[in-house]
Length: 84
Image (cartoon, rainbow, N blue to C red; front, side, top):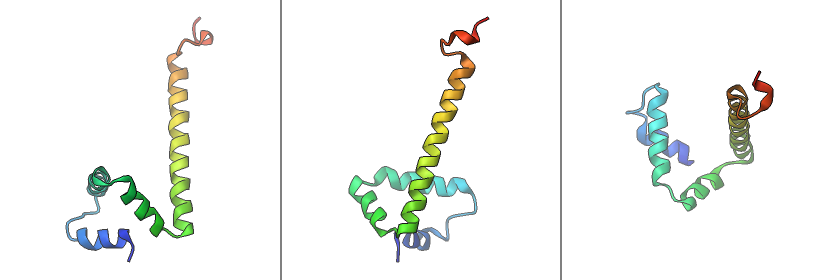
């Protein structure tokens, strides 16, 4: 049984379909995890799951950086082309 399966079995009676419940549970767990705990969870993943996780991380990080760059461009961020 994987960590996710164990986690679901333990909390399935208190979790609702609300994303906030899941987010709060995950945030609470991660705050208590050590690096070793996180690595243990990662070692349980098969190749497909690890690829999916890495893909989601990379995609989210790139989207954040694009959003930050675009926000800076909108503010002008000292770029003379925005001053008329």
